[in-house]
Image 1: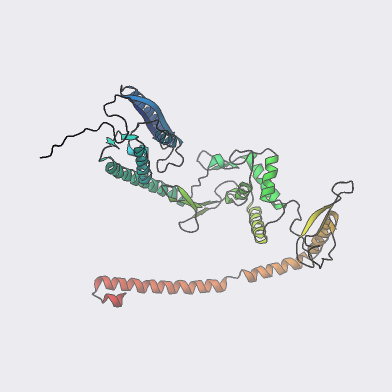
Image 2 (image 1 turned 120 degrees about the horizontal axis):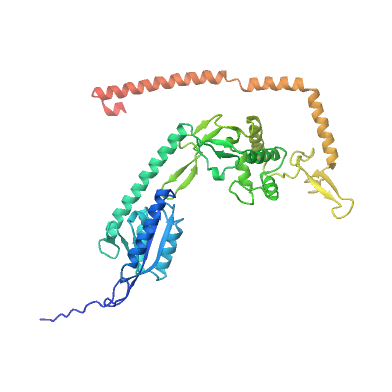
Length: 440
């Protein structure tokens, strides 16, 4: 009969260190709170103090560091700088054991949690979750972590849905919510509504005025930056997107459109513009206006007109407003004698010298343009009664809704008849035995 001799293991298959070697384990702890409220910050401080004393109180452990994240959600690791630094140090071989209060403190995303733990395990770093008493090097550890991470993820889903419901209920009640720290023109009032900030309101009016004078959002941003005015985010430099956002925000005329965007996924926190997927709410006259509704509508019409015409120059009031009578191209400003005392700015067709056939339209000076503009306005004023009468008649014809309203009434009646018929069929099927194929 063969003789079998057992040769005991001498090194750990996880850490590759001798089993009988008395070496202190390098231990780190991780603490996280998801909000910056006073209660949560007290919990955060308590976690840090507890684990510092807990690790230092063990003779076989050596404290590496207490890694922390304040006011950060646990649904993903994207913005958790303390967590990412801890994992990087562990993968670099600086940590043997990570202690965390619970699985939910480590991560509320099942995939993130398991992926990180497996990566740490491959590099010889164990994790211990005190509340659940789970050690990741234990054979049952991964199964328990999967279950607990899934429960933590579902808890996050429930919290997210409750918060979303509360937010939408406030919207339905007409309660306006804006990020006041990044919103120019208004401050938070005692009832959390918008209260006019007179100094910032002047900047908003200036932006609208410059736009109606012909400047582009890019040109307005450059002017505000040059004048040393802080952007809504408190930065020294403005960008065209911030200007365009102000020009299209209905809150500056005293109204508020609520739920312009919504969160698609509670894990990634990805937001999407609301294009009709969920209800929106429009609140009129909610707060004091900075811009009159008439001026606001003029700006929207001008934005739409410019978008249809494509990119335009905003360096001059008449940029993109003068067309060549021959080829239909835009007139642009040109500088003659730019380097000597005869320097002069003129306007001519941008395609005047393109190809073999040159446009014969003349060049114009600023004085010529102003003179022709005033002449055209005077002609319109002389005929204003006839023009207004013609416009009024055209508007009455264009906005006559009587035929559409009659058609709408007919369709509503037809829909009601169909709804009654469907309801009758459903009632009969619930109370009388019918052939289901015929019923369908």
